[in-house]
Image (tube, rainbow, N blue to C red; front, side):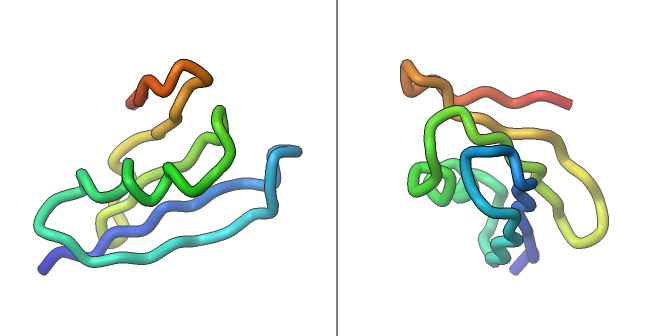
Length: 66
């Protein structure tokens, strides 16, 4: 099963952290971010490859940026 990680910076909304997980695909990252404050950005990694930035807006919309 592939290895993924989310990295979150010290952005004034929370402490920096790294959340590691295994899953069939990176979709699980969105559910993990539900536990973080709205608007907090995370970088999604698969092994050492950066897949993109994720964010959940105040409206509950999930955004992906390259």
